[in-house]
Length: 497
View 1 (cartoon, rainbow, N blue to C red):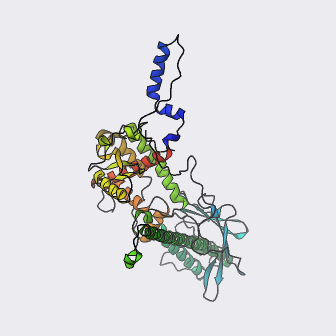
View 2 (cartoon, rainbow, N blue to C red):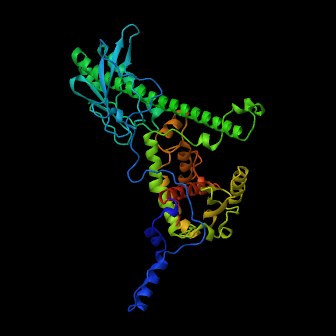
View 3 (cartoon, rainbow, N blue to C red):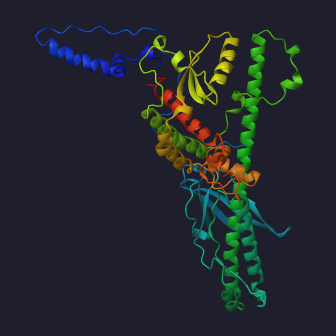
């Protein structure tokens, strides 16, 4: 809100320190006299005015009811011949599409090519991180999925380990069962190799070699063993397909949003040229078609609901407490109830080589800078070049002058403990792993950087020992403090006091 719109009670609260003391003295000295009505005090100078961004207060942002689809999906009708029916279910708020009765897919055998085919390939809004296998009623299989990391269970019976000694001959009646066991194991290994950095699978359960030997002459018992192994193979097939399509959908949406932002920024730049009277004929069109690297084109990114929850969690558990910690320690420069005409910009100017959090008035610009002086020069040139008033700057926090004792005893231990919750389990080794990490938390770059800062140096592991590199820890302090600073400005209507 604009300060001019703040009511009298809030103005009184902002100046409570001086008003209350004066009130007590007046009451004591004039007990026999009628107290005069105090006139509303008018502070000199122009009021502060801030633009405020809309921000959800209280409960977290609602989860979208419908997911955004960039690849086609149509629920399948049951094929004429069904090998297996599998129901995907979840009670996870981030997998709303699987809530309730869930989604049904079918396995059918294509005899022409002697292969199984999956009929009905759903698209999930978020990557499932925990997978459980269950046997439902009417011969259905149930695939239970969750975006949370927890124990993965299976209702299949058998042994999690299986081996057949080479010197022991496999009974002819068990050849198909042994081949199915190998296929299921190989498929699980492939899923763990490709998606295991974020996805957890249940153990597979197989009949033991002794059970197969004892059932060598019982074809019905052998068929039961084969069916239970193939059921787990089919469930893994669905898991792999769901993961592939979930990642593909995310990549398509991200690409589409990126291209939309590029076109928007190019159109905006063309409009600015038109208003400035610059003829398009004087523009190098080859250069105009290049990628736009401006902040407006690149800072917006598509977020699924899990990513948004991670951002909200970062603000709530790290950024806000960090800012409050710095403010309570006296490291935040506040303007309190001062009017901007009373403010001593010279004493708190950002004309320094230090890293700072700053506020520019009257442009209502806040942020962080690795060098305050350089940021001042850049922003001044930008605003004056656009014909705007020359901005005044003040440093809300001078990051180079936070007391060392406070840093060592309080701020840094808190920061490292909280960062551990947001870092990646290990740096990604493949492009797919980087995408999966990005889909399930903060941006992958922030996760890797946090890993480097939190983990002590290990010569055998990349992205470790960042605390020993100049600027790594400071970057995390600056990011957290700036996020908390801007969140506080938004929440309070711009009043930093």
